Length: 121
Image 1 (cartoon, rainbow, N blue to C red):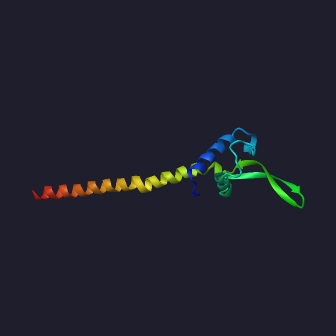
Image 2 (cartoon, rainbow, N blue to C red):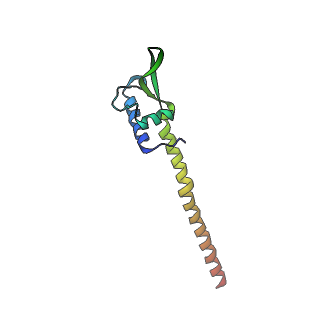
Image 3 (cartoon, one colour):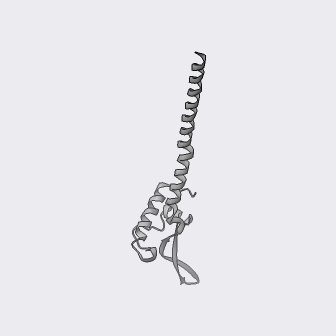
């Protein structure tokens, strides 16, 4: 699972809600939520949760890409579902299973001790 910090997750959720307002999920780069220089936005792009659609234009002797919109990738759209499944599995393995094992062990131990006491009387 790809690790994210809280601000990245919050920004991803906001962008997902915003993309629902536009056709095909493309959010214009002029949107108030998008700051191309923001660290958390760049991290979302680097982790492939968000991709930019660019138009290439020529300036003097070079071609520069100019972002015009962003789109949430499939990885970004399903990140929270995957995160929920991993958290659920972790809770089962690390919390509920040890509690169940401790409970059963206590029952067995106390049952054996009780049986021994009954037999010795």
